[in-house]
Length: 88
Image 1 (cartoon, rainbow, N blue to C red):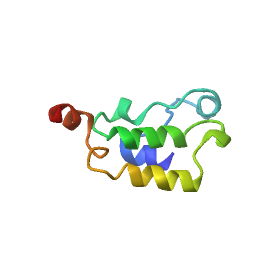
Image 2: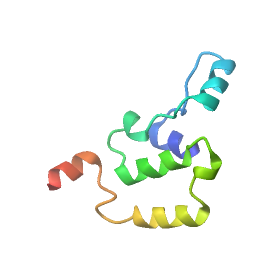
Image 3: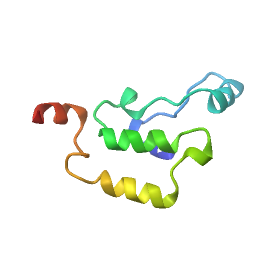
């Protein structure tokens, strides 16, 4: 959640009441980082999406996250969508 907020500058779910916010947290699919900030690298968008999965058993373990973060550090993975399109 904090990583999503750091990358987008907004909370995962916005609502007009606490009840609505809680309902969204429990039932709604979180938005993708790239739906808010298009220039976030795809690899980072994927990692955040995996971390926000509702079922904690489907989220990556710390070891898996470490591997994914290391893979996301490659020059190609760090390109924004616009930069990736320019390279083609």
